[in-house]
Length: 452
Ligand SMILES: *[C@@H]1O[C@H](CO)[C@@H](O)[C@H](O)[C@H]1NC(C)=O
Ligand SMILES: *[C@@H]1O[C@H](CO)[C@@H](O)[C@H](O)[C@H]1NC(C)=O
Ligand SMILES: *[C@@H]1O[C@H](CO)[C@@H](O)[C@H](O)[C@H]1NC(C)=O
Ligand SMILES: *[C@@H]1O[C@H](CO)[C@@H](O)[C@H](O)[C@H]1NC(C)=O
Ligand SMILES: *[C@@H]1O[C@H](CO)[C@@H](O)[C@H](O)[C@H]1NC(C)=O
Ligand SMILES: *[C@@H]1O[C@H](CO)[C@@H](O)[C@H](O)[C@H]1NC(C)=O
Image (tube, rainbow, N blue to C red; front, side, top):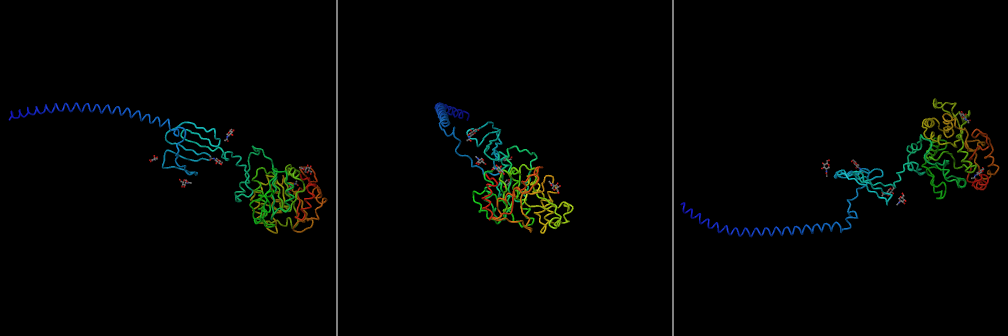
């Protein structure tokens, strides 16, 4: 069994050795084959490496759009609104300030600076992590200019907004800019300024020294003033006014509030549609500007049309001895205008206890001023009027009345005090004149009053 098995083993060895030889040959063949494949691989690899390198170098150097131009596709610009947030992307934060679009990269810190000298309008800078684009042309960058901007006469502020804004006062009185003081001419009218052509002549050449405000009845059609008229676009938001009622005071306060919006307005003149000037612009301007006193007429009239209109329910705020009467037509300074517009205490008492036959327009300002501002008030008005005919309304003047003598009498016909000195120039304005008087006024006034 063993022999047999040995033979079998020998036989087996013989077969095995033949197989081994064959295997050796096969192995050698494979070995060289592998070496060949290996070298081929190396050659192909080297070739490929070089060609890929060459390709990428070519790509980088030969494509001009890559190096000098920005990539053609930016991500779509996000809609601009005050709170943009981008929760799906933690890498970029986009807040928008007043003038800046700030894009902050919250991941890797980048540090570099880009400036854009060829374009003054947009400044681009890169902070630590942010790209900051600043619009330097934005007008709000000069806050003072914005603040001093005068709103349109016909603005859209409501009365609370208007009165609040109008009564802002700087604690520092000297302005940090050049200011030419102006006179605000405030026309309280039913409709058109009847004597507009005379006023046009009066104002001509004095631009920058005056402002005009008109408070007509809300139904008034202002297209009567053409584009070139000084009254064009000077209408303020108005409300209905009833003769002798408190709506008259409300209209006066509304005019003052609107005129106060212009910081240049330093004197405030209330006029009706039937008023005329008695001197040229420079004389009136200087008289008002140089005056140390305000001009609100205030008299203590003992009769029924004076003290008789006082209501004891006004006590203790207003005593009978403080009750005054005077013309509605005033000339005041900015300080008094501010106090009138901000007074609610006295006006609310008048609204309650002074209604026809008590006429607020004849008592409210004279009484208020005599209680609180009498030290700087002259107690007279600069608007001439003729009450000599009696009745509820002053005399009206039509064409035949207007003569040179008559006008001279209004200009120099009385004496009064001005800055501590006696003068015969006591009235700068006069009423009531009708449109019938206009052609004579236009004829006499320029020469008589030395209009420019
Ligand atoms: C501002 O954010 C609030 C709360 O995240 C959101 O309700 C509002 O719609 C956003 N407004 C705008 C204009 O995106
Ligand atoms: C953003 O951050 C929140 C938590 O800070 C995380 O859960 C979320 O996976 C982040 N999203 C991305 C897109 O990285
Ligand atoms: C940019 O500013 C300079 C001086 O600051 C000025 O001369 C130039 O005209 C300005 N350019 C533009 C486009 O506004
Ligand atoms: C910069 O602001 C001005 C004024 O607000 C505006 O007219 C202009 O279009 C703005 N420019 C840019 C590039 O946003
Ligand atoms: C004006 O009237 C007030 C109050 O009656 C008085 O105190 C003051 O002296 C008067 N002023 C002038 C200049 O007459
Ligand atoms: C205004 O009138 C006065 C005389 O009342 C005169 O001296 C002055 O020159 C006039 N002003 C102008 C600008 O004409």
